[in-house]
Length: 203
Image 1: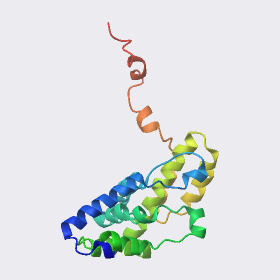
Image 2 (image 1 turned 45 degrees about the vertical axis):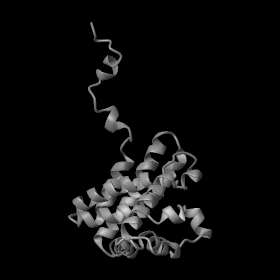
Image 3 (image 1 turned 180 degrees about the vertical axis):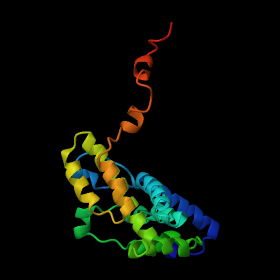
Image 4 (image 1 turned 90 degrees about the vertical axis):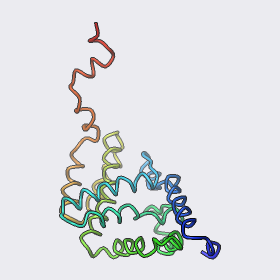
């Protein structure tokens, strides 16, 4: 961007950090059609990176590259905002240019744009896993909304599962679909904890 010329590399890196922070203020917009649920792009990107890391381990793929693609996959939305599927019918954004402007002068251009190009072409196993991680985070959210009583989330869930590309992604998607989202914490403690929590066992 023209107004960024003349800023030193370290300042541009700080600019970049500030821009990443905008993802915490950038909502994911599909939930307005679903009718329940909400999250920002930073929240989505974090769990997507965690999922991608695990998928790469499961697949014997390059863990670092997969994780980095997940981490940066929606960075452009700090500038473009999130376009849901309905928005995308009518609106277009120049995501690559947004990334070029975001990284310009930071020294990060080649690396981050390289991850972006690999993700967009989706020819490598790592890119396919990163694409699956993106969908699996959404599938986890849909399952939670379905468990909480949103019947439309169940319909969306069926469609989202069909977008998964890899065998490891399918394995996780199918497991998500049959796992109650709250079991990890509700079934974890000894059942007596629920009774003793109010101090009933104290003398």
